[in-house]
Image (cartoon, rainbow, N blue to C red; front, side, top):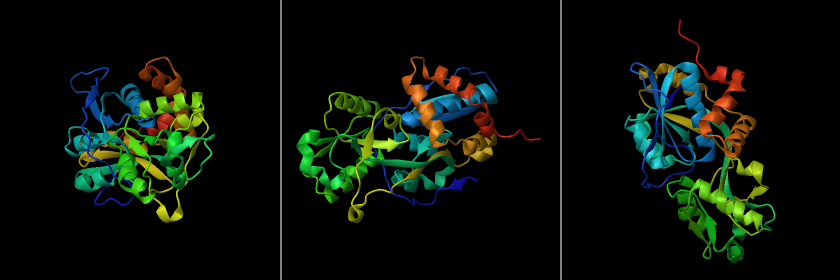
Length: 296
């Protein structure tokens, strides 16, 4: 059942970055075609399953789908203002600021993935295990944490809470992007260098490398041990596009399914729509479970 956000109930918030909405043109655009306008952040899991949603909606359900890549602030704004139908990657425990700001104009369409994790991670060969050890070894990490896009809630949380709470006076947070973070991680691991990065599951990097999250001290906890990823829709979506709303409500992955999709997308030389359509064709039962029954 769709649920209105009247207040934020979990942990993380997001800053207000500046970004540009970049649309992905629909494959077809004929008058009268059912339409879906979906916005997503440039994070590995959301990129993979949002493009898969486009493939299913277009190929199986007759929609014209427009995808828009944006940072979190503009994604929420676009859905709250009604220019887009859904924001495809809401971490309620990370995005409290936006849920509070736009709660009366949003609905949650359901959980796309359960048990997500977020934190700071290091390669397994790094000989520290706790966040409280970071400052003592700051020079080994180049005196910085490799972050992601500045608008991500985990960035704000680390800057405003983790760094002061753990007394990290010799290490700073460096903004980059999801792809830039994984590139830096790959380079450091190839050279057996120490590196600490913002990390989250689900993500293909945990299947590629042996990584570990740094543990929190019980008296200094910043974030929950796990969270869910949800799809957020504009408040009138169910009324305007009930079939699309039901599809997004049904859209859900197990850990194994999403990990497999992400690895296929990351490793393939083909363009992403070719890859996700191939994955879709190999998972017919799962795809069929997402498609709403036709109203009689």
